[in-house]
Image (tube, rainbow, N blue to C red; front, side):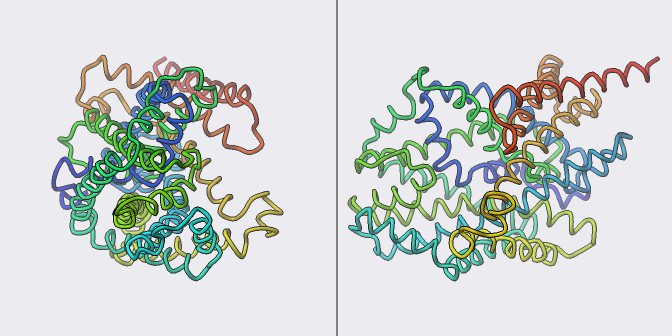
Length: 480
């Protein structure tokens, strides 16, 4: 790959990867999970799992991208060819591209809600509104296919415009403006929350070390969060890794991504829950926290509508930084495979994903119940799309770990990681055994027909153990 397709600054990859990782989930899911699962105890388990699971796979995925210097699909085709391994490993690239394509289709619809609320806040439409009014407003939005389609179109169009301008003029320049602006806005919201809300209650909710509140399910949620929060298994990190400078440190960059991603989630949690507690509202609203509970909190506070508008601009920025990373894996493949111009490739990907997104739009209204999807799959079209990505991503992550851990040679990995032998051995142990077993468990638990904890645990151990035994047997046979 020519040098014009490498980030112009080493730090750009960090911005890009953090931008991909920091999305809607960071602004409500991680803080919510933390508060509901023992606060500091959950954070400790999360830190352990992100070290043992998230970071090893993150390093592996970046490594595959930088090693191949191609899009995920074409990159895995190149790596399977040069390493003389089964072409079945190309599944990694296809799973990542499929995940990115499907996620973008419904992510754009949900992110479009933030457009609606930005307008409501800045125009003062919700100033002084009560819970019933705000709840009715949200229900009215979901019940309106034209409105949802409009916001879906505007959001995905803005994301496409950035990616269509190219690696440097579009993605790189966009991230240099977007990410610092997001951090500034986040700090402004935190200062406002500390002044107006109840910051001590938020800190108690998030950081009190309550081991008794940390159930087995909490452990599993920490493990799943350590994987999903880093945007692993959906092609974005591999695609961005292809543009990463050969001089940048994989290990330091991976740890920096994990630390910044977690720090943003915790700061957002403090800011959000300080407002929620300050207004005497329920912090356990899950996704409804952002679009019902928070608007209610802003409606009742001094200068709330203005700060509410600023907050939803933050939400939009975080969503766009993630959505552009979802477009890149498929767009890059179309450019490489079919020799399309970048604007053509981006347009093809985005139009198809936009059309698929209409299923999500209609899942909240016209197709909310009694559809073919409910009959065949027992869930809405949106529920099915979400289920598919929750299966594809951990499956892809498991395959990434196994390929990087077993197919890449010692020399290749050391050339990419430029680290000492001790860290290399620890990373290879984690990426060969611990990380794939953990992600295999998450993958098996996601399958609706698999219930409980025992079967996924046995299945994860069998998958990783059988693969390791097979690779070891083949290696010994080749040596003899």
